[in-house]
Amino acid sequence: MPEKDNNRIKNEKQYEALREQGASKEKAARIANAPNAGKKGGKASKYEDRTKEELVEKAREIGIEGYSKMNKNQLIDALRNH
Image: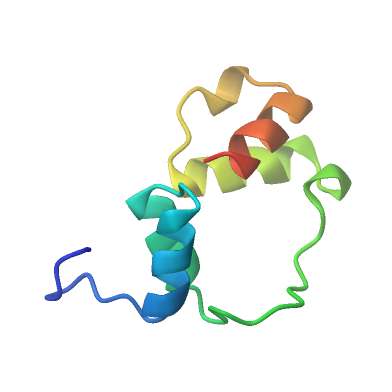
């Protein structure tokens, strides 16, 4: 479990469920700390509907390495499995 000082988890139940499903600590924390953590029905567009440039920006934001050499399908796969 993450330390309790500055690394607070907003939705502990969701965090634990994600960890049990095999998500990394970083990914589980990112999802559980999202502004709408635990809510369904997000309004983000599908990765397939985004431009390659939008996918590159998202990959950069979340720290995926090697994104600049990836094609659109590789970016989608990397984003889904990060």
